[in-house]
Length: 114
Image (cartoon, rainbow, N blue to C red; front, side, top):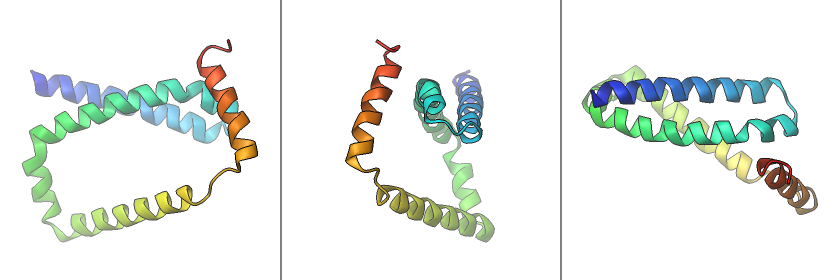
C-alpha cells in the first residue's frame, strides 16, 4: 500500500511541476512566474519526498540500470550538464538595484498583495 501511495504522489506532483513549469516557460512574464511560484514550490517539495520514497523501494533496480554503459554515460552527461548550468546561473547574478525591488514585490505578491 505505501508503494502505491508514493507512486500516485510522485505522479501527481510530476504533473503539477511539469504543467506549472511549462506555463512559466511559455508565458515569459515575471508576474506570471511569481503567481505560479507557490504551486511550483509546494509540489516541488512534495515531489522530493515522493522521490525519496520511490527510490527507497526501487534502489536495487536503479543500481542495475546504472551498470549498463548507455545509462551510465547518459547519467554522467546529465550530471555534467546540471553542474555547468548551475555554475552559469550562479555566476549570472541580477544586479542588486534590480533584484532588491523585484524580491520585495515578489514577497508582497506571495502574501496576496497586502
